Amino acid sequence: MNYPKVASQLIDMLGGKNNIKALAHCATRLRLAVEDESLIDEKGIEDLEGVKGQFKVAGQYQIIFGSGIVNQVYAQMAKLTGLEEMSTKDVASAGTDKQNIVQQAVKGLSDIFVPIIPAIVAGGLLMGLFNVLVAPGLFIDGKSLVDANPGLADLAAMINTFANAPFVYLPILLAFSASKKFGGNPFLGAALGMLMVHPDLLNGWGFGGAAVSGNIPVWNILGFEIQKVGYQGSVLPVLVAAFILAKVENGLRKFIPSVLDNLLTPLLAIFITGVITFTIVGPFTRDIGFLLGDGLNWLYDSAGFIGGALFGFIYAPFVITGMHHSFIAIEIQLLADIAVTGGTFIFPIAAMSNIAQGGAALAVGFTSKDAKTKGIAIPSGVTALLGITEPAMFGVNLKLRYPFIAAIIAAASSSAFITLFNVKAGALGAAGLPGIISIRPEDVMPYVFGMLISFAVAFALTIVLGARDKAKKEKQVKEMQQASA
View 1: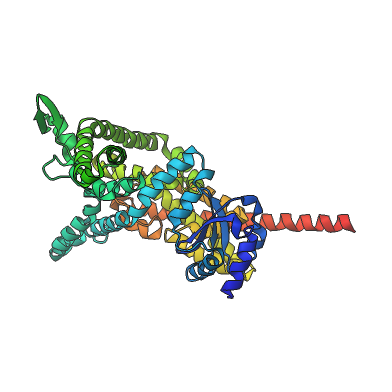
View 2 (view 1 turned 60 degrees about the vertical axis):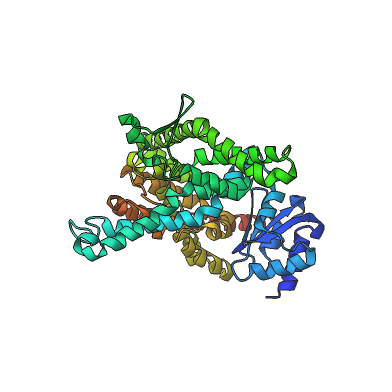
């Protein structure tokens, strides 16, 4: 590929270099923010060498090239436009003015959670591996692998410790990321997170039992009692506390002399925010988090397969808008209260949606006679089965429309099926084929059957709708030919 030529042509099709406000790339996509989207030649970009798809989301225009190619095209474009050394965050910021309030809120959550996803996924997959070792009857009738091989007991215990760490100390990760997003010092945020999980506090997961027995420890300060309770696995209390910390810190800097800034600002920011957190913010938002988790589980359990089908149907459209990142906060809360919730139902439904997108893309790949379409559809379909749907969804299914319709119908069908069996995940991980190890042991078989349903329906329906779409286009061409004769 002639990268300088492709870059030059792409700049022209984007309306010229003066129309490009920001430029960056991720592993597979070129990310841009433009002044005027009406100047973009989407048809020309679609036919450009190396382009595997394009879409607009969250105020950004993104072009899929694939790994190994995108960085080469970006390097040439950066030279020609002078927009070098920009990050994806810079592009996201440049596109914010095109977003409504809901989109900005979702983007804010995404900016906080996306950086910590690797830690959460690592912990989730390790938790799944622990479940494989200790689940009775999974491989041996009536026994777990540890029961059959006692020498594996310490290995399982070690894996469990590794798996729990990101969730036990989640407030530290969240407070660091959130403080950075809210404009505060992320290291002060981390200190606040450490404060919220300090070992001197009652473990957050023991709060329910202590509340029932009336043995909640307190600080008695001048006759005022403050609960000494930690926030392990909590989300909402940490986000609100980090927001307050950033505002307090920046507010203090406005009137504290610079010579005393390094001494007084951190001291007062942590002390003031800590007191507010343990007296007001923590107890209030913790209760909201419990209500949210209980409410979602009640809706899932009471709405039955209809609720599951609806959630499965809308999940992929949520991915298009980026709103699916907000589900991470809910899932963590569900897992934090797993003794009551039994796990998260969102993860299995997300997996059904991902499998459906993969099945639809593979159907396109196996039936298409176009070499470029086939070359994009088959690899992206396989990737979607493993839990990464962007190439399949944006590069194939949305572009042709009918595969996307087939996929969301398949996701609804399979989600309804797994809801009938109350399938839930006891950990997070890759929502697809690898997600088997994150599912509760007793739910593995319904989960597997759900994936088979999702794939089969998406694959078959894509072929049917594709044949219908092809016949419709051929009819239109024939009618045009007859009209011009």
